[in-house]
Length: 434
Image 1 (cartoon, one colour):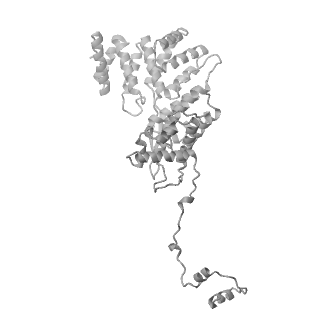
Image 2 (cartoon, helix red, strand yellow):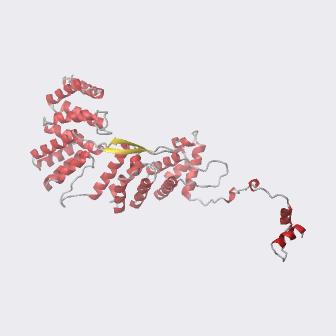
């Protein structure tokens, strides 16, 4: 033992010598120690955990095949044709439970933004692009898949509690509609849906998707509850926009006979009218006081013409900044717009001249571009129905009103549509509107 080592041991008062290997002795006697930053850590890639679930393995297989068969960059991989991928075909033709597991995995993976690791033979990115996962989510949801009340509760809560667009909402809503038409939704799912349409997350949807999501969920909740004021008759409830809420309030104040017949008429008007529905509507009208029905019809058409839309707050996510908050007007649900179209038909058969002025007001609002004036996504189609109703159903008074409107309006689309109907009338009966 060298004199240097003995001095060190005596300083710490260690009398009994201990054994030091030759390698340690060389390091102690060296004048300088190896600097820490000079040490190179070697990682053996073969020891990475490769215990991966089948669905995760399948996700990587689809992604890798897509990269091999596509000329697009990673950010545009969703543009590829999935049906050309063998691993995708394996997924989409697998048992519905396997597809459900796959959807669970991707939605959880996206929402938590967790990176999955996998043993790779070549140096490539281990991260599957978000838009690729979203595209796969949509494909899986559009296929045959079995989701239960528990599944829907899980996915709607996940969507509500994380930043939106982590998986597409429209195909999930279509699956929910299909499920609700065959099964009764559970109390837990009912509570979840109530919470979902009141959540802040839904405000990040564009106004059209926002209204679509709310209308689908509202209808499922209403149909599931089967609200009836009396055991013997079912009371049909309109979706709760400003128009629907008003009509529901009117019906709730009626006695059983009127509730039943008015409800049945309104429910029929929400769908395409044919000879069968016309006969059913006529039967309902004959079962009640026709004067009271005409008064009710005029009252709700008047409400539609002078309707005031509610304001709603929507948001845009701005990267690395606060949300962009902006105001919009809540549109009339498409189902209720279809009902108003049906009201135009009933008004035309009743031929009450008082309806002409109200129909004209609705017509002008349908083509308006002013915020809060038009009714929403299908306003134009309602406006066309109004023009046709005045042109064909209200005799000379309706035609005169269209001529007057044509002269005073500044809306080019209204003029164009009136010109179109005028040409048709001239070709069929030899009478022009203009």
